[in-house]
Image (tube, rainbow, N blue to C red; front, side, top):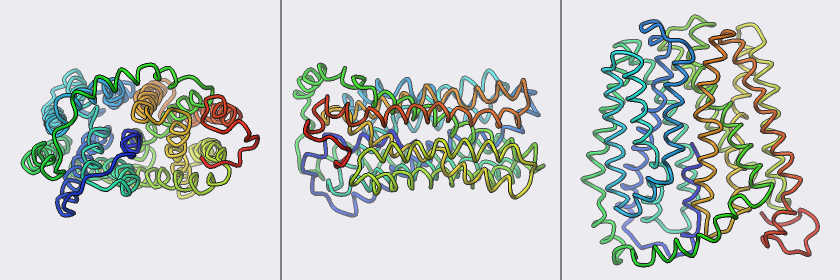
Length: 446
């Protein structure tokens, strides 16, 4: 969820930010943040109603997992082309269209008659949500000073986690009182209202007027893309950057598996109603979001003098999540089990910030946005999409508890990737000309 936004701190930060009225800028931010909440609420509400769908439609856990994974898969596959389309045809126009699509598709989930119809609707939800993170933050930073861009990106990272919490928690409460169809209906209506407000308040014309600038330099874009094309191989030209992609994606596998299946785990093994299970699972999702922000802050602090410590933070979080989550799921139901799972959830996606920094340090500044889009793709294909689906398949064969005991072991592979990346980090930066050749120790600024 953090990685769509990171590209906002790329080459554009070198330009002078336009002067805009503070009130209008914060209004744009508020509406964009609201759509971000709608994005993740529409995506995660499904997890809160897993028990109801399983009971009503007699679905297997594999089928339930696929309903969650298809959204992440489409987000990963379509991020690039839809972001390019937004640059070509207008970001605001594409944002409004995207929000309308995912909201209508969420309403279609509410009236689905069976698994096939629900899967098709979730497919369209993923299409609508594919480029929102990258395009939404691009609109926001265009009306704020350069000095606030890192803060705004951090707010969007937290917004994704908060939207996930609201989707699971509010969805569980609504489903408990009105039925699972209304849970989807509420999310869809919320998104449509925000899309309408966004289209009325934020327009390309008004943004240009606020900037006091001419329309975007369309003539320069082809030349810029042509100049960047020779740099594209640099996205994969070092051992350490490839390790960052792989480690981040595998760690995301664990985080998404937990996010998708915690409501069902609490429903089956703690006998909580879907509404209560959704609320409690929302707490675990919030803990995961706090860990994401905290992991980035810790890596920045420890990496000021020794850049490679960012890798150490990621390695610690991946190994710690294996130990805590595996131990927790092997314990009998009770407060101690939930406590260990909670601390494991804090660590399981705390690698998101450090890995984003690693990718930024290992790729050309001119390709920052593309590098982060590549990281987003790796997260989607290695983690967001297969995490819930593979966990569901294991649950069908072994039972959900046994599946959740095995899934954390994936973090051993991500830890190995982080260890290898740390070993090659300074060597790769020196070879790529990103670190002075005279530097022989990691005592350098990241």
